[in-house]
Length: 301
Image (cartoon, one colour):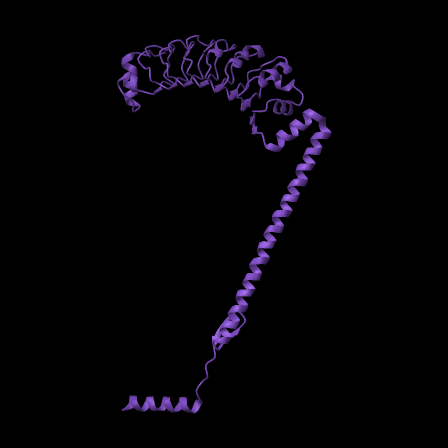
């Protein structure tokens, strides 16, 4: 059973979610898991910046053209097969995961796109995602588990042409398996990349990948050995530094202890080991006994 996105329903929903009954005052719309099959009546929501539409029955993204300030659009888990040509060009984040889409036609219109997620879709051919090359600010690309096939060299050329690409997720696509030394090749060719698939790219990994690309395995091993030697030198330097700190602290402690002993001797205080005590002369036993006897007589009287 599908629901209809009426104007009254939208106003009531905004109020329920802590928004406003006046449409243009809302900046976020929570329309997920409502059973919608169409997007409509959003023409008054001109200031909205984020729309959550996941988990519906949408087949098209038509109806968002009036949301000219829209930046984040989440439409995963729908039945979308094509990208609308009327999507606002202001969109910076787009999540299309778990949809029926197979071709990213019209994606190039989104010139401000920075994050694109389309996992578990129906994209099968590499050329169907080439439209992403028209998104100069794309920094995060996630197209995992799409069964994408194609020329691995063409994939590398495509990635190189993405000037802002920092995070890339390609696992679950046959084209990854067909690319020998996949991780090394991608890292060495895409200089802006900082995260690939399941882990970040460390400075050492990038240096080794670039050495491998320029000089092969031997060059990579030389870089690794040089890095290991440099790390060992750094560790020894740190150990020596800490050892010197301990020595200096021990010397200062011994010097202070010596000064303390000298000061105590000058004050006629007997210092022995780690503790000291004042030298007190005890009174004769006879005098002590006489004092005790006198105190008893005073008590008796």
